[in-house]
Length: 387
Figure 1 (spheres, rainbow, N blue to C red):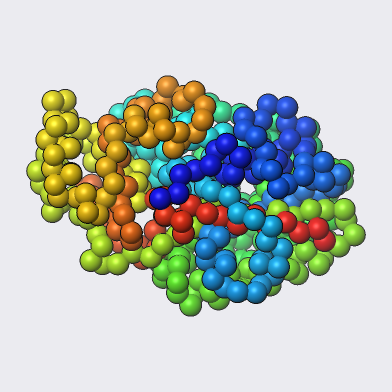
Figure 2 (cartoon, rainbow, N blue to C red; figure 1 turned 30 degrees about the vertical axis):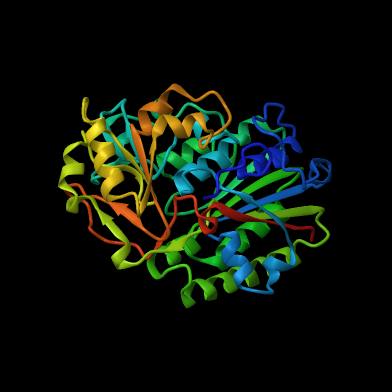
């Protein structure tokens, strides 16, 4: 089990290193010890690329590549090691304890529902909350790194997510640029354009989600993932070459890694009706880190059943234990955190995942998973290139 190293070795510390170099005087965490902020600050163009799902373990297994050639180290993701939580940390510089985006599915007490937080809609589907006059600013309160640095900022997102409520809120303070979804050539072309055709010192935050999508569908150890990582490496190598002599630095990392699940490693809550009866609502969080909201007076029954029937395949924690032991961060938690992590957290062991379902929800099962505390999920690469 790998606990996030918020002291000096997580993606939040990486963000601190980068934003401190660009005038952020309100950083919340120490910089990474192996990155020189002065070196970053001397560069006209700071390009920060997040390759969703491209974990450190996966990268090391690929052998020599453009990425491994420029690998300077690794750091941990946050907990849970999932896109919604980690990307919010990237875009705010805050720990999950501070921003309280605690997984893919987040219980929003303000609305009395479990949300899919990135699409900004109910877990069961339907329309986005803003169609009912509930806006991102009503749910999210944090400032962004783009608002806190002194440079002009650009965010590069695909045309599918760029106008989402979540993306628009957490891109505040930047100029948003869209590229064609799943089109690596268009991604690189837009990066080149921002570096070469816009004046002055600038910070560019670019997000590529396709690797993660391929890993979810096919598995992290699939040929599809290997081929796409090679495609990414080649495209970004060409990008780096194209911006030679522009006084730039390119920093590449990921939000998390993944593991592959198996059909017989599924913990289905429907097969545990006694446990389900102790819950006041469906699970939230992620299949690798599930939040359980337990009925009043049923905590003893929940604990007894979980320890007897699930302890071989799940680690069982009181949510308060994880807060007190700094799994969500070193900071004073936002008051909303307690509402969003339930009473207990089930963290599946090995390659197990835990699932339930709600009406209207697709029963589709991914092959690749993340959110847990395994080495493969938690460690991400830190790649630094000076063109």
